[in-house]
Figure (tube, rainbow, N blue to C red):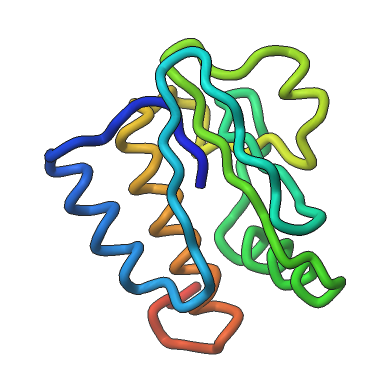
Length: 136
């Protein structure tokens, strides 16, 4: 996860840490300044998912299926980018493999981190057949 802004000490940071500990797949959080700063170079060929209010609203099962498919196709790194208050520019959106939204509402970027981590944990649970996700 690459996110603009510092989360510091906050209830959101505690929630992020809680889900980060639960994820069994390799995970790294990189924080960049609100503006400027350079994205770190990928370690391997990767996919990029931008959290964007205009993106696709995927069900948890569909999100897990996408990550499973990419993993099974040999993708070793998926980057999730969370922008600052103004979101992402047109060039970044055009280069992304997926624009992902958490519904039609606009969410604070600190809360979006926690929501993304919960969905990543849920996706890994779905893929592993763990009972955490109880779809109806």
